[in-house]
Length: 224
Image (cartoon, rainbow, N blue to C red; front, side, top):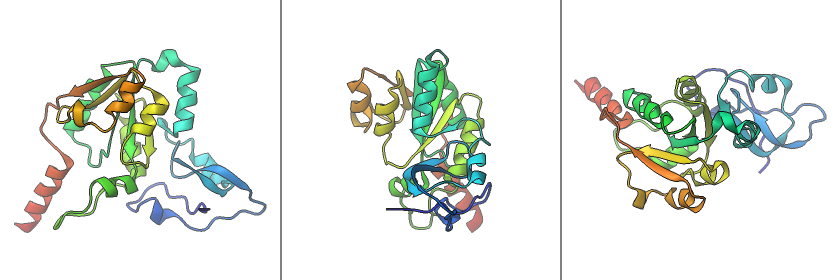
């Protein structure tokens, strides 16, 4: 696969895939990364050399990293990051339950990093239900920007897989946090965390709210 960088869009409701258009600068060469939309929103693929404008956008939003950049940043100053707490999810429509959960997770270590499911990943794990809109509601670049702006959050990294196992193996956080509605025995990432000696913490959410419930209330109101 040899994708081309496309357009640069700072805001909008369309997905990253829809924001792509042809880009082929004179004398371009093949590299393994290119950036789009915001700091750290880079995809490791073979593609033409990035346009300088796109490279400039890479520094516009603090707290969003590629996996490689985050690894290097942590390695350069572990005293500012470790013990590292990691959690992951779609974080589609941010609500009070998310905020309180992230606040509690941050208390488990020195820093908190969020693995954010990409748009394609969300579509895979949350297929559209009859009568409901397709997920995600909010595109990945905007979800990452909102999370990075939250006080408890020190870093956000977007991942395309359906589980966070690869991120966990690479970052090896001391603590892996998930909501209290999960069970360690059925958690897909549990074996990865246990393999390097990490700890799993399940956090009970104080407010029983969810993005799906919010969507249902909106749809119910529209029908009345």
